[in-house]
Length: 187
Length: 217
Image 1: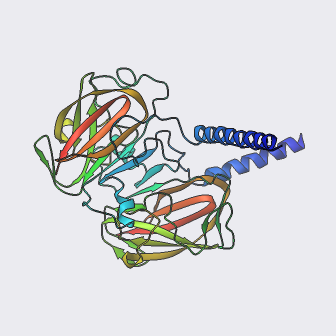
Image 2: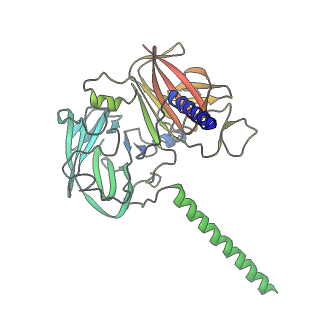
């Protein structure tokens, strides 16, 4: 009994000791990632292989499909989604660009999407450093653009966003599960 | 005789190959979640699977985006750090240069404070680091670790990969004592804690913890 008491005391102390320390964040279930245009800009930069200036960067989190039905179930059609997980997805332009004929000044923006079966609405919004789409406010929209859904036969397990060069600039490619979207950016 | 030997060698080689393939399979499935490449002409080097050392982000005030959700019209954040989180994975984090096996980083050599891209810190207000004023803006930070202290350096070479430091762009530096933790931290972690002068950027990994004072001007 004495020993038991001792053990409990020691356990309590070690518990308090852990508590006294700062609470460290666990590894995220939907880890964050970052894509640049030009692709892999940071690597090209240290290799002195840059041929184009830095145009854009997207910071987003990567939820995984994990056997779930994503569109229409996990994500309701017609509802604003943060395009990822955790913080709202952030897109930064290092130069002025154009999306759907709307001029976008260089700077940081948040990004949302409204999924639908055949097309999505992609939103660029002026409010940054926000969590999810809980406080999303249409008033701060810079633009809304509709992009068609491209169905894929292969499954993308982890939500992904990356840039792809086009003749007019670049597409921001957004893909998850069995769909893919292209958001054309002109610069 | 030759035939027999040939056969034996053949058997041996195919067994070894078979084994190697199996091990490869095992390694692959264990290392990363199964992802299937989607048929777009995305640059091949864009990773479609989750990073081994995933990226993370910390704000000051702590959990700023969540706080902002509860408190609209909050003032702008003070700082944000974007870094990647390597795992200790049974390795020794730091050792001197005589140790080459199972060690992540040598003492006295530049370390990107994470993995992949250089760690990026952004101040939304002017700050002072070790008596040196830094304007509001973005910087990268790296570390030169020693057994008892870490030298933390602020540098202006933004958007670079963390393996090559351009020292000509160093802007401020400070030496900080290593505090020993009695708990093991598997993933490298960076976060801000409130302090009377502004905040501390706390960096922790293994049994080490370092606290960098940031005076908010």
